[in-house]
Length: 113
Picture (cartoon, rainbow, N blue to C red):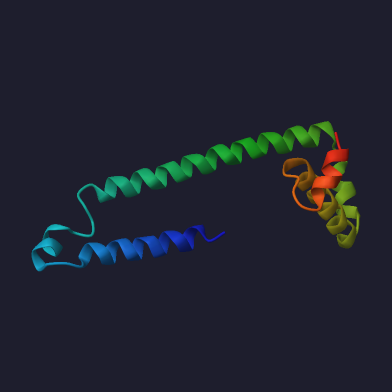
């Protein structure tokens, strides 16, 4: 949930801890090391590659689902938003029961196969 925020806080603490200390150490420990552009390029290319793979997989899943049951999208779009919200909550609750039965759900999950 706080992934990017944690990363920024970690970077700020790490950079501030690197710059504390003697003047000689600060001069030796530069903030950007040699090869930082290569690291940046690798990170960008990996991100783009991962995004492309995910996009291709989602396109395949979407086209397969559309071919298998072509009218589901029209049916869902024709139902009212409140009904869609109720169905989404019910489906999410059943998913939670199946994955991790704890607390009040544990009694219900025991009865489910």
